[in-house]
Image 1 (tube, helix red, strand yellow):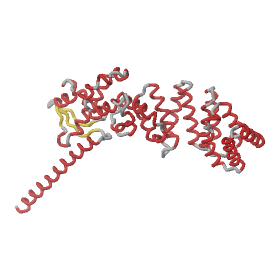
Image 2 (tube, one colour):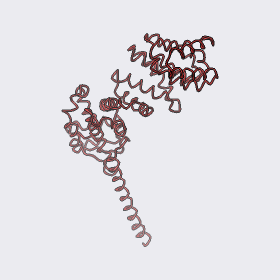
Image 3 (tube, helix red, strand yellow):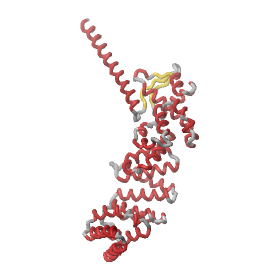
Image 4 (cartoon, helix red, strand yellow):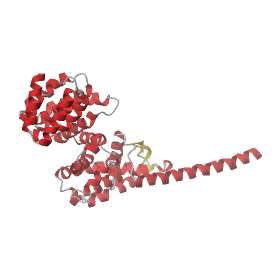
Length: 381
């Protein structure tokens, strides 16, 4: 820890060796330090430490060792991590950077959020700089349960979901990447650079298509980040997502010359056809009223463009995955559906649901009138 005399010497030197504008900044920082206004000093340093004149390892370490270390135990622990994040970013030896963060954890242990923040920073170094996937995975798994039980969304949640999504994309776990990517956007969309929106939207679109168990595609379609794909070479992804959301197999087939140019999609064509067939079955069930849920194998085969002998297997897969509920009548060659998994709906699907509700209400009204007439007959007899 730097002594008071060393701090004064360091601050005086900085004021003399910098330009007039920067000298003024150092004077303000010195005044806040001398007056022990720790909160104001923390806020000032969070911004000041990113000044272009400080962006090298030696300058930042000097700032920490000769100044910040003298009061680091007196300021807000989370604020301290925000300040030292910049120092860590510029430490060339990334193993030393991890060790620096490990020591920092002991200094901020009174604040859970600060500890989580340092763990996320370590995870970023393991993933991006050291390519240590096992260490990254360990941090993600340690933090997952803790953050899910936090009770409210903290500033660390967005940072964690970004780390987790980057890890899952690196290892090819599409469904986990999709889940964490959406959670990240839900926490940190306003802070996410606009110039990176289109790339993130493209990756999320691919993950929605390729991810096992991802059938709620409407959740992504409703997200404003997809707007960033308009006018780009990847705008077709939005149309393909819509085709999947509606189970539109004809649209999927017509777009094959486009989507097959993406190696990951071309390699998983059979899997994609299985998914869109399941979504087609879900959409067929959703569009029908409660009294018209008996769907013949022939109708399913026609909509899904599958051979009729494969229809029963398709329905069994949908039942096994909890996408629909119902019973198969092999003798009659039909499926009696009773439920379809809830999904985020677009305007067209909501309009269809409204029409279904109108029909339902008309049926109820007709039944009420019939009961009134029959009741009158009973009472008069």
